[in-house]
Image (cartoon, rainbow over all chains, first blue to last red; front, side, top):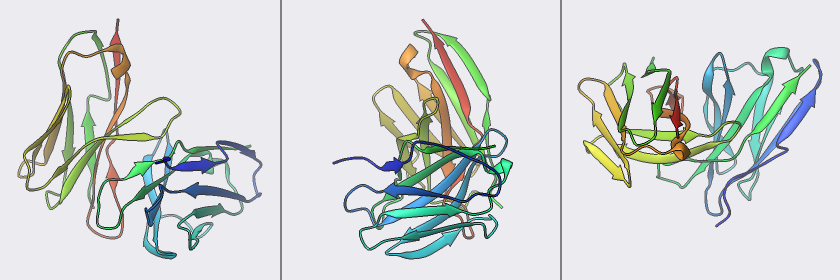
Length: 112
Length: 112
């Protein structure tokens, strides 16, 4: 089976712009979680989607949003980008009922 | 709020040594703990998942133990190799709304 894929792998944006990141889970996985990783804060949970519904949400401002499609692919959107949004954004998928998460390679976002 | 700490933050050892990485968590009401490795600029790779009912799990040269009562887990790496160089993260599902809380990570360098 193909692993979790994320696109794009690298992205450069300027402050105030918005960005959309995409994540395709492993086939058959219906749960997709998003994480932000920065040197200062480490790995932090953003949100989780299951069957097109947001099931859990981390402590991030409303500028961070996401959605999941019927094929389980998920997108994450960040509006009005700030310099502090520069990070590695990771998504992970898992099977229903399983705690094991499989991570994608991440999208590295740089906000200038 | 669950807090997860990993000690040491960085470790450098000569090839062939056995080593132990530590993970401490504040809320012992967990139902599993997972160890990951992350290579520079890459996503996370799941190494071992220990259910709360288990005391340890083994995979090849890796052995992870879990002591819920003391809030600790250890990852033992036998006969370390340069390919083991990476950052190792432990993760626990906390209470509340978040999916997973990650530790601060231990950056391991195995010197040939």
